[in-house]
Image (cartoon, rainbow, N blue to C red):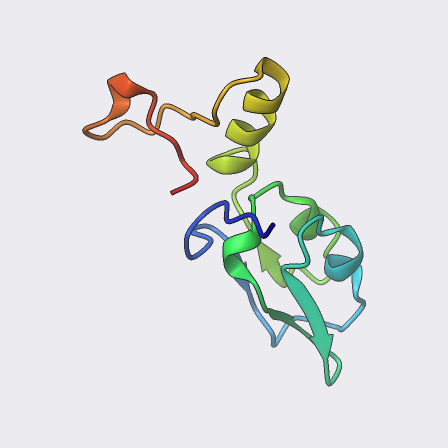
Length: 103
């Protein structure tokens, strides 16, 4: 089953000009968001990104940016720990119903 965490990966960005093709993003991403082709990283599955921040932390060239600890990464982990549905309290019209971040 393919998990979708955040539609359009709201905070994930990649500057291919800065990418040195080291493949660290590919190695550390738990959901295969990246591939390296022709010596540069590419985002191939943005919706699989859970904004954990591993890619950005391991990108020595600073080509990847992501706001870690927001959105689904935190909600999914907390839901798993508590045995509940992922909910990050995003607000919005369904906030009092435990609105989820995962679409």
